[in-house]
Image 1 (cartoon, helix red, strand yellow):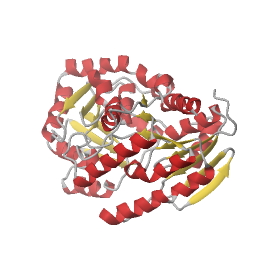
Image 2 (cartoon, helix red, strand yellow; image 1 turned 90 degrees about the horizontal axis):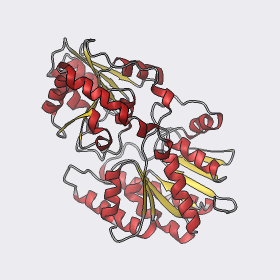
Image 3 (cartoon, helix red, strand yellow; image 1 turned 90 degrees about the vertical axis):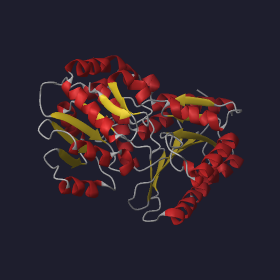
Image 4 (cartoon, one colour; image 1 turned 60 degrees about the vertical axis):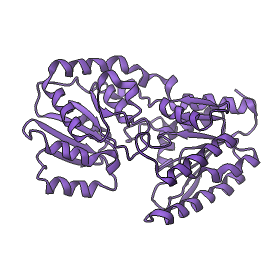
Length: 396
């Protein structure tokens, strides 16, 4: 471990409850949150290096700032209710206000997850000896869509920022690592690729799928947004035999009320259940009943490693998705790949799995050899973060 007094690490992330995560981490309890919690692993990295920590999250609740233990926890809501140029100006100002806070705290390392589209503002921190580590969970740009002029400008700014201000990266998929390398091909950089990881006992009580049980249940878990493919899923549900299939949609998002109205207006309430937010126990129950998990993210979203793909594999359920999801490369043997945005091919894939026992059982069996990568702590966000932190501190 590098010998340095009073190490300080900072973290800029998305929405979340920093205090609740801290309490769960410090007491060793389990959060209601179903997936991998990366902030929890940041706290552990701070403890491993005996560092003070400064965490900034972006939940829509009121601004708050509190000190607990060796950590300063701040919630700074991002601009809401704005669109277009007004939003981008407001977000630019929001990120600008973080700079003086970082200068006062003077961290050795600043792990940046949120705000990477305007990260050029943070370049001033280099003057003060603050090393920035981009922690990239989503793709940097849409890989299967034509980029708008504004998106191409952002891409160039990111290339400049990475070239001048970042030498270490942690990213959620090898495809994203490839994007980083393409932006700065001449610079020597270190990229660590992490995967969502889980304790083995988390999925131990989910039974093996039962092919003969009907209706054939299709499960969606994630944010209820248009670019996550929720309306495509409704179209799929409208085109299958309502007596043989049922679709469970779990999650919250800006489109949940509209999605519920659409299901009602299309007369699909008997086929589609919109569950909204579910706690861990309720999600386990639906996973236990599911035959297949669907991840229909559209080309309109910069999808990273969708954790639902890993969770489906750990539950022994095949996945239906497209190449928009980088996770497909890690679970391909247990998945059915369809072309992006193709409602008809999604329908065909689900029907094939429901009607072809041999295919279905082959995909289920393929889950088991794929599970180890998501149980291996060496692949975790925390393990990769410790690698790059060590590299940075040794370099200093």
